[in-house]
Image 1: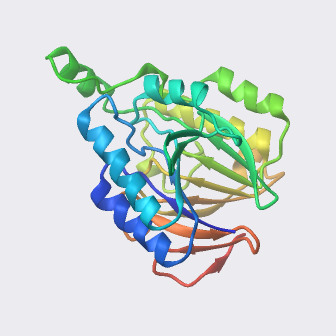
Image 2 (image 1 turned 30 degrees about the vertical axis):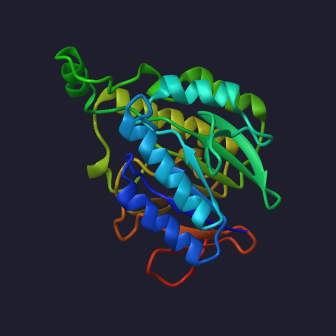
Length: 261
């Protein structure tokens, strides 16, 4: 199976539709957005976004899956995943657009996938200020991955082949991109707890809007290694890549295929 993994899109169909078309040209059937998909369907524009993404998916005979980020309507996201789950636990918000619960596990191509969505919005105060001045709702308290979510993942006792998250490890390299506020650090530490609980071979994430390609052994005290890939956003050069689950080969956009690990 080949899966296209995509970085943050923030509800911009002008970026995501061409990516979906590219996936269709490559005969890929699964496109997965790693958070900040842009579920804002409390607004008319949010419904139009879902409709356009769904039509692009239909046209290309594929499905679009999304992990939750910090720029989503979490009231709606949680309702959909609680009340509209499919056989694999994803919520079908359109015929070809599916949302993962904040924490989720499933199997594709005999490989174990685990997802842990959410992150901290560093622009929370600005969004709340706009809301207070009569603007539309822009921030949801449930945007984070909480301690109880981590404990539930730990209780699954599942080793992941692939871990998909929105936020990154607190040990991520190129730390100039990591926000130093306490809430963000705590959230990244929760991602590290998820890593220790699932011990994935490979970890893919968004949120940083930066390309990352490194081996994380620090999180485990050098007792395990996880090949880690962070994706850029929108339609940037490294905003997507293709994962072949049969061969464990991941190819960045516009680059030759590279062996994972």
